[in-house]
Length: 237
Image: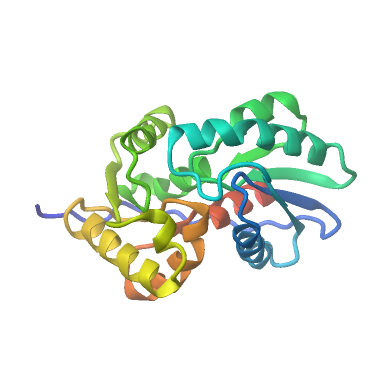
């Protein structure tokens, strides 16, 4: 399949937020190490414009890979988000799982802005009319179908080029950065060469660091969902 020229790519204008403001990042899974990793990424993205505070959804699965996992995580996300929204100085909440579990419910429950990393990654990937795909470790058919549904709900279905899933067990892949990088690199290559993607979303919060490491290997942008959501939260958009 021949891939046509890339669509015009717009870039987000940077803005500032008072350092005294706080963005709460809720990790919907129960992995404290994943929370720490995503907070580090978010802090680097914020670059002093806001303080990032991480919250781990204890009691949820350690890795969210099925619709049932997402449903299980939702109540904890809403509870912890509601608690966070009541703290002084909290300017926004980021829900840091790619399927955005509990994001809609939390928006209905709090007055501060709530940003799902999946939703914001789609918006960033499709910026300027770009064709985009997803590279992920998640193979559950219902969850993969939910990505197509998200693209449609955001008005991005014509630009959406589908999902490339890494082989093997997701829980094992994420234990080794080198193994994860190798598997995701192949998935990204397929998205670009076969699906004609001009941006590739790293489909999951725990894949963020891998996306940053792999960027140097590709000319097209690899969209790190955590960073996209934090930037949106900082801009208030």
